Length: 219
Image 1 (cartoon, rainbow, N blue to C red):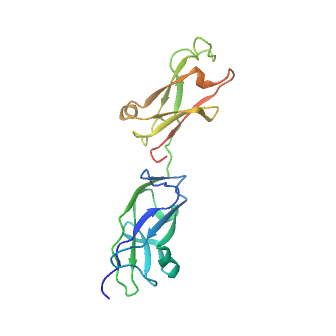
Image 2: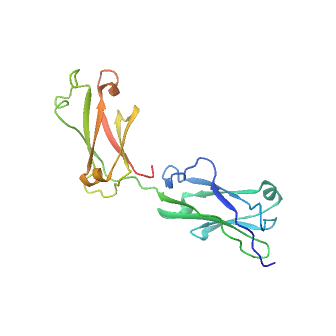
Image 3: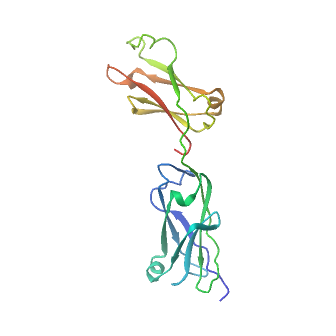
């Protein structure tokens, strides 16, 4: 026996966290993956081993399953990867391969690639109203139709890039229709973005508090 098993198929199982090519801090605690055994060529049999690989090599704690009759009948093997298994933030590539009982290593699956990014943008943005409407801490009927706010990127921060987003919050919560803008290269270069809010978006008359927060491309 000198021929290795055919390549399996590797895909994310469940919530499609990797569909955008990123794995962020909220998504990273655990990621479920499914290996589908080959249905043609040199098929897997009971006693073969399925291994999940990181960057083409075994994980620090190898992720191996010895196939039994149940897995052969189902045609799939599931793995769970914890954030700690993936190491430091950066580009990642996951593959799966089958090794038969004789030790012949099969062809690896197509890679499932993504970038692990668990670091939130650093620093605190600066939010200010443009013009004088809010200079007296009131917004009256004449001033309310629209108000433009400037969100300035944190001083000394260099980790904001195009495709990051900025969101205005009303009393710490998203507006009923979220006020979210995506940073362009120009916004990043000049270090600010302007956002206009209509009076209707503020809701009923009363005290209002506005804040801004950034979210990076990974979410």
